[in-house]
Image 1 (cartoon, rainbow, N blue to C red):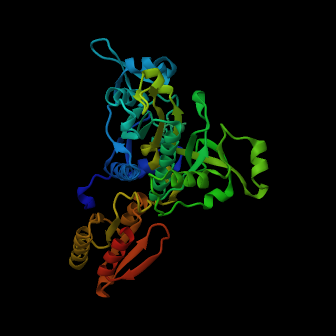
Image 2: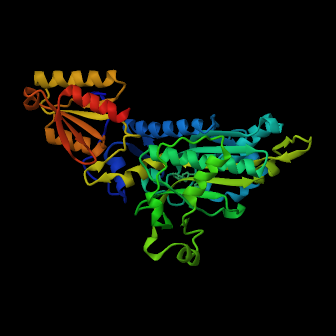
Image 3: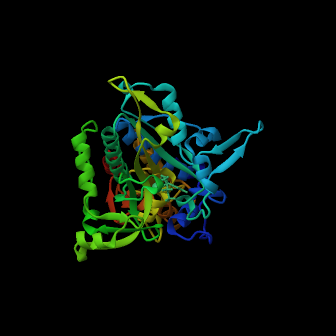
Length: 444
Ligand SMILES: Nc1ncnc2c1ncn2[C@@H]1O[C@H](COP(=O)(O)OP(=O)(O)OP(=O)(O)O)[C@@H](O)[C@H]1O
Ligand SMILES: [Mg+2]
C-alpha cells in the first residue's frame, strides 16, 4: 500500500475524551472512529489489525478441532424465554420489536441459539464430541461504555460451545480451549494469564478468565509472581490427548492466580511466599466456562446414549474478546511516540520511508523494495508523501509498524538503506536486498 492512496486519518491533537493510552492511540492513529457511545467504525488500519487477530483465533480454533460457523446478530426472544434468560439478562440486552410485533434482541451471547441448532440436528452420542464456534458482533448495553473498544457496547467476540456426552469429555473440551487460548494470545505477542474466576449464579470451579496485566485494567488480580515467567511457546500438543491437555491445564493453573471475585487472602498467604505475592490490575481478554447441563436441560438438548437411554448434553462456552484485544495489545505495547505492534498482528509488515520524495534514485529504490517485499508475500506500507522526514517518522512511530526501512539519496550512494526496529529504536545499515531478506526471515 502506498500512503498517498491509503485512508489513514491520523489526528494531530490528542482527543480529550480518551482516558487511557490505547484509546488515545487508536483514535490518533486513525484505527477507529466513534459512531455513537460504545460503538465504533473500524477505519482501514484498525480493520486490518482486527482481521489479523481474528485470523489467529480462527487458525488456533481449527487447530484444536473446533468448527467455525456464523450465527446472526439478531435473535428471537422466544429462545431466551425458554432458557429463562430473557428476563434475567436485564438492561444490558438491547431489545427490538420488528414490524410484526415480534420480540427480537441483538445477541449479547449465543448459548440459546447454538443449543437450538444442536437440538434440531444432533440426536446421538455418536455425533459427539462437537465444538462449534463463531466470531460475530455482540451487543451489550453497558451502563458505562468506556476506554474505546475495551468496553464497547457493540463488540466483536469469538464464542465457542462444546457439546459432550459426559462431564469428563466436557472437561477435556475445556482443557482444549485453555491450550488453544494460550497459543492464540502468545501469537498476538501477549501474555494472558489464566486466573480462577467466579462461576456466577451457575457456580462451579470450572471457569478461568485470561488476563493481560495492565495498570489500566478493570479487574483486580492476585497472583504468584512465578506465573509471569511461564511461556507456552511453540510446543506440540495433541488436542485429542486427554492427558496432554490436562497436563497443560495443571501446569498453567497450579500457581495461585485469581481475580478479586474468587480471591482468598488466607489461602494466598498460605500458598505463596511473601516475596512472590503480587496484586495488580488486569484486562480480561477471554473466559472459558464449563456449565454442565444448564442449557441442555432447559431447552431439551439431549442425545441417545450407547445403552439406548437419553441424556442432556454437557456443555461449556468459551469466549475471546477479539475487538477488546486491540486495546489490550496497545496497553501492553506502546511508548510515548505511539503504538508498537507485535509482529503477529501488525497491520503492515514494515514501513518504507522515502527521505527525499521526487529524487529519482530514492524513488526507484523505494519502488524496487516495495516490489521485492510484495513478491515475498509481505505487505509494506510505503510513505510516498511529499513530506519532511520528521513528519514521516512521526507517522510511522504513531501507527507502530514493527520495522521501518528508510531510504535516502545519501545512503543509496553507499548502496545501503536503514532498517529500524520500532521496539528498540535500533537501526542497522544494509543493502536493500539484505533488508528484504531480513524482513522476510522475521515473518517466516
Ligand atoms: N463490553 C465489552 N466490550 C468489549 N469486549 C467485551 C465486552 N464484554 C465482554 N468482552 C469480551 O468478551 C469476552 C467474553 O465475554 P464474557 O461474557 O466472558 O464477558 P464478561 O465477563 O461479561 O466481560 P466483563 O467482565 O469485562 O464485562 C470477555 O472476556 C471480554 O474480553
Ligand atoms: Mg468474562
